Length: 264
Length: 343
Image (cartoon, rainbow over all chains, first blue to last red; front, side, top):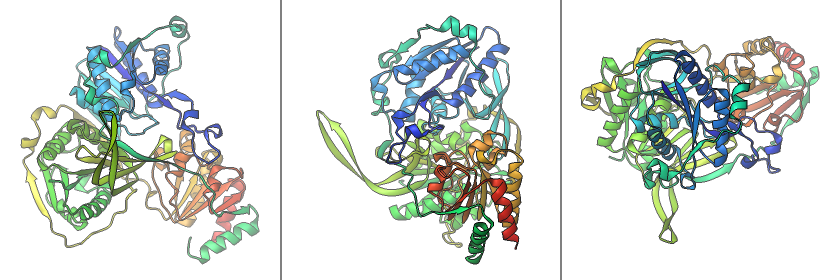
């Protein structure tokens, strides 16, 4: 089977440390370190398991981003992917999810054959969960989102257990299909030392807009229906706060006050 | 043409999801402000009478697609129905729940129609928009009246962005459960019901994904609607530590919530997570126990009436938004709160 895993390099918005805070109380985004988008790692793990069950399968990673995003391709290969493609071009900058999905879909067409496309449910910088389904739509594929585990795959169909609101569901889709993997799926295995040694200086195929036969009106900022009108930083400012100790006097006074004004 | 549409989520026993009623409430306000009609789409099986749950929210037209193959939800048939209906009716705004279904369906529809979609909006407003566009070598300003301002947190909650899609329709947005308020518009409101023939909108080839098995449990708690929330973070220290929180919650008739750190540590169920990727709460009282206050957590509880933070770290970020900071440990403070509350 031929598996393509979409991965994104993202700022580590889940761990905003004091060093990334400005004196004004806002987050300095450029000070955040970059990481392999966590749910894309969950997707990679499911892909590696499939490959183990179907010897001869290949995993190709695809990422779109700055040249530095080649790091996620390398990381993927260290953990079990076979190959990777970096899609990078200044003309792709400023893309919203729709323009991103179009660009990724064009790159996937260029990769050619595939049975399964996998990616994380969402990326932690945008939390939109839109790119997976939009890539599926662009390629005319069925999709299974919020996947927690691939239960079986016979090369013709795939059966997944997926998270739904208030429960779980088992669904079957014909291949080729696009699967998005939830953070509650199995965590990704760590790097394999042999793979690290063998791929330390690995070079990856790099494509620009010219390589993917993209329609210029559908990429980057031009191809994005959404416009950012304004961005406001959240400022964490102190309001009038009363500080109490854990003493009986302080706590009984607080409870009394809250009871008296019918708060509790 | 040009109306406001809401995609209605319908659960087991044909009950309309709260989030859909919340969106109808918001949709009614937007439609009134824009001077257009509010329409909604119901896709499912055995939907006779479904309009009775919807009309009180001020719906002018209910579109019904009723077919045994349309429940439970699968992506392609629901997407086909929505896409083809939108091609016909040309809405200006479409709202969906930021639920598993809405986040599966919304992007599929927006991609097919090449329209902008903004996920997880926390506010929706109508306003004018001026866009700078490059024409030749010069920048000119284009003015757009009455656009949908889609306001959402981004970058893990550290910024709030206002998104506009001036040149593509519909303007699509998803909103999480509990973020908007649900309010009956007029109990006697009468709109139209249009029953569509599903086969006219959905090709039989769309039914390729099969649901083999499905387990849905009724919610085990009412965190979202609770008046008082007792929430624990990493500072609670253990699963046993949460027992104290449950005891206090029991006394106060409160619900127990948690930060992501406590959920990740395995001390409490995932469905009690409060924050940007969990439940949004706006209780009268929020008692934060050992929660440091990551921005993602604050995004889900900052609208609480009174915030009481119990933390032995006086510099915990949550203390900055709290009304009361109790400096102490959970083991020390909670038993005292229980004791004095009972008195």
